[in-house]
Image 1 (spheres, helix red, strand yellow):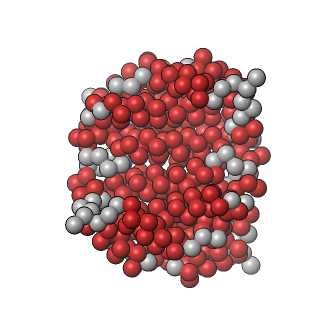
Image 2: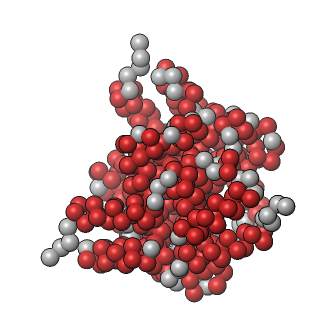
Length: 103
Length: 103
Length: 103
Length: 103
């Protein structure tokens, strides 16, 4: 994931996009892309949604939107100096205390 | 990241949450959490947004929402069988052709 | 609806909130509130979602989030000088041409 | 606004779209469209965002997305039986108590 973050940083720097990549703009872009992923599913029944990867066109769209969401999440994290894997690991630790494993 | 995906899968399985973790529901939850991350920034000027990590309360909130976004993204990917790192790597390859590096 | 737009404008002016109510911030806030409305439904089956107004707590939450979405939509429209009813009327006109009524 | 709600209901009924217009789907669609409105602003500086209506192309896009957001908000309200104007009026009443007018 670090290698992908570096590729994204280099990509944006080579095209002089850094002035646009502020934390606020990247948080907005992340939310917009998450909406585009949801758009694929908005009119589907639960059964149709579960079969979304069986159609090559939909499968490509899903992979494309997943990539966009992850790209903006990583670029957001770079912009604010957050390690997303460490943040998630700590959150799971907290959730294990908050929602105890049923016996 | 694979280890975190497995922890999330085990966490949900132990609490019998899998029936809720359909692709459609997880795409909705991802979008909702991306909105919660954006909420932190919505009234900030660009300058205030750039300084968001200097306040310990805001910094904790940012890390917490990043964790939630990544958690739902990974769980979504598990539910549809997509490898998010491969999807992003392929997308960057495509974007390098689409937006040529200026000379 | 004009009367509500005026109440919202007066409310914000009396509290000196206008500097925050830029088109970009209001578009972000609208998206955040739409996410909060979706959050109510994210884990519900279609059947549970259809019955959401039968629970007084959920019904209050739905009305509250509808109000927030409409409030930010109206304030956004004030900030950019768009008449939302005229915009929707024109859009329905266009859609009637785009998706002809089946005979 | 009631007349627009009725046009939307007739439009959907004539095209047999009602089975898709569940509260959960409409809440998702509302959130997706709010994201599309935000997309127009995501890379703009506050100054550029304030001037968005001066460009005819952007102005048309803004009006189009406002129409989509309002259309799904009204259809959502129809699906759950909520009067959006009454909901907003009550919310402003509550906010006037919660955030007292400064003297």
